[in-house]
Image 1 (cartoon, rainbow over the protein chains, first blue to last red):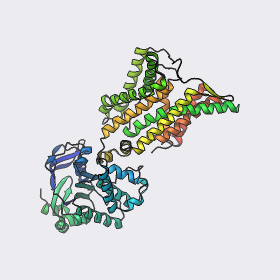
Image 2: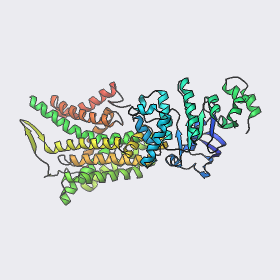
Image 3: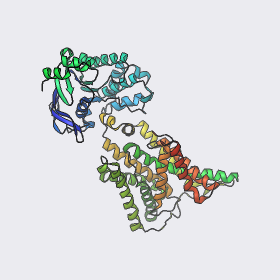
Image 4: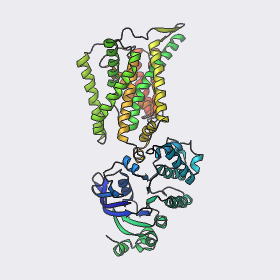
Length: 247
Length: 286
């Protein structure tokens, strides 16, 4: 579905992602894991059209989209749930959801979308008239994902959905990601919560300082020395990277 | 004594409503684009001249010229955005300041060149005279202008809060990247907001032309006062601008009444400095 082909991208003069390639297949859940500053969010912003690569190509169903503006990308059934939720704080929950469906023209389609997201996040129905900024962190994250789903995406980009959420709710968020995947939506997930991200993923890529250093099925990566050393905080990262990195 | 005070209070509210309408156009542009439109007062002056010439050349009364002024100023706003402001949107703040300042100087000087610095007045507008309540007099054109300003403000709020496009403008104002991710063409929203901001000041210009002198520098003081109102109300806040507009109108007339009319603007800007000192975000900002 998505090919990220030898892409370099960054901010003004600073290149954050260097010559990175990966792919996401139809219906897969793919996780991009790595520490803070590794460039995971930059990749999602480039796919969503918020950043333009300096080199390489991003293809969606075979069509290049790396020069397509963000407001057009969403019409191609790609939705992004940005890090930190980025809700429209002074708008109501309902208006946030309606904004999520901005590209949908038919009222029937919007009503169907609403029905589906409310089935996933019933709490939002009770909060419909509340300003988004007054929700709790967990509720805001649910609203952010729901808003992303309102456009009926085929590819959902999730940027750090567990960030700033109570541990009890993190499990809930990952359960929701599984449910979204069961609906046939392809998910590209960026996470610092590495073990949860690998648990939910069909495949995953490990990113370090703007380069992919490891890839494979989620379960396999959970057992890898690099991941265990790097993300359990033990020493030996360089060693492990030397053994397992696939340039 | 007390009737004079009531008279000044009413005068303050009447001019305050028009100030509010002018400032709301400015605050909308700021809220969406983070740009101060220094040409805002000159847009007002152009609108007053459009109304004046519509009356002088074709006998169109200022009341009927309101939609003409609104549409022409909306179009002017779109053009200024497309050919000047949009070019520096991603540039440094100073470039944005210089662009709208340049547009302001160009319009003001072109007006002197084309229309001369003479003061003009629409001599027999449809709406004239006063309503008398005892010794308190209410100017009919001023009353219509302020009631019209309140109506237009209400219509704007309805548009922003109830329509798909209006919500896209609010969403862009709150979070530009998120609006883009929802599929909103934010460049188009910028152009629309600049156009609406100019259209609003166009309506205010038509109202003012019913009773105010028209000359090339007329926009200067209105522009400066509207910057003050936007800052007082809180940058980007429409309700804040409305409240601050009324407040400035009242302070101006009551200040003139209690002290000396010569000091009315000094008192307004004094109030501005005090509020910035106590509450830098303005009444409803940040």
